[in-house]
Image (cartoon, rainbow, N blue to C red; front, side):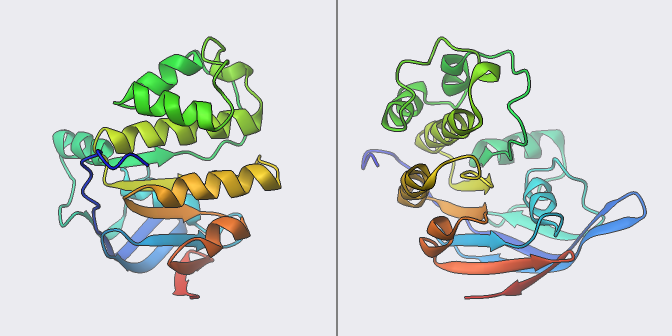
Length: 217
C-alpha cells in the first residue's frame, strides 16, 4: 500500500458489551482489547453474534450495556458517531447484491479518496466496471467493490477497518487476493470470517459462540 498515506491505527476496547434483539440477547458480556495495528479474525457459526458485535462498534446496532471505545474515545452524540464512522472503515456483509442505486464509480468516490479506491478496484479486477450499477454486479464483484471502497477510506485517514465476511462470495484465488489487500492496510483490522486464508493472515483469532467471545489463538 502507499507509504505516503498518513494513517494512525486506532485501538479498540470493548468491556462488558451487551446487545439484544427485543427480549433475546445477541451479544453478552463481551470483553475485547485490540491494540492499535493488530489484526483480529472473528470466527464462529452463523448467528453467533459476530455481525451484531461489529455493527455495535459503528452504532448501527444499539448496545444495552457495556463500553466501546475506539482510539480511547466513546461515542454518544450524533457528532461523535459521525466522527467514528469517518475513523472506522466498514465492509458490510452482502447477503445479496440487492438493488443499490449507486454506480460503482460513485461508491468508490464516496470513500473519501476516490483515486485510492479506484486503484484498488483496478487491482481487484473491476477497472472497466465503474459505470455499472452496484446492484448489477455479481456477489463477488460487489464484495471486491466494498473492499476497494474500504481501501479508499483508509487512504482518507480511517485508522480501523471492520469487515463482515468480506470474502464469502469469492473463489479461492479471490479469497487469497482479498486477504492480502485486507492485511496490507496499515490499520487495526477486525474481520468476521469463515475464510481460513484471512484468519491465517491475522495476528489473533477470537471466536463468538452463542453471543460470547473467547480467545482461540
